[in-house]
Length: 147
Image (cartoon, rainbow, N blue to C red):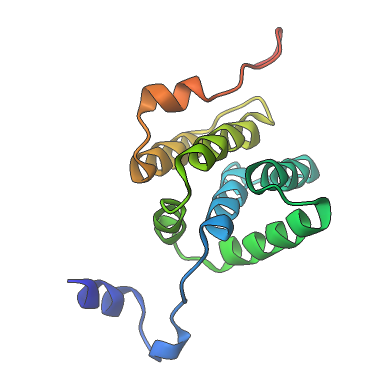
């Protein structure tokens, strides 16, 4: 079955197939994907992604920017996000929850949740094994008068 899926999705030279991805890059790529889902990847969202990487993985700013750039390249070249969702399953439980909180922060940065963003969150939490109720509880409250 796995061979069929691989052959179906990746034609051509097997050496051109993507290699394994770290859980850190995977989570960061999913943050970048969330930021792109509304077709408007802003400087604010870039900064939020960098900040999220610093918080989730205890990176300094330079390391976080480097990881964000790696994730941006990964996200831009990926035909689908399931690869990153699957790799993010290897995050420890605490980091998974931090990741979901940061995912909400990126999505809520423009005060509008699109259907595409909602679908991404739903897919991510399903793959990570986080209940919808738990995911909702991890969503930071917007300041009063906003949202």
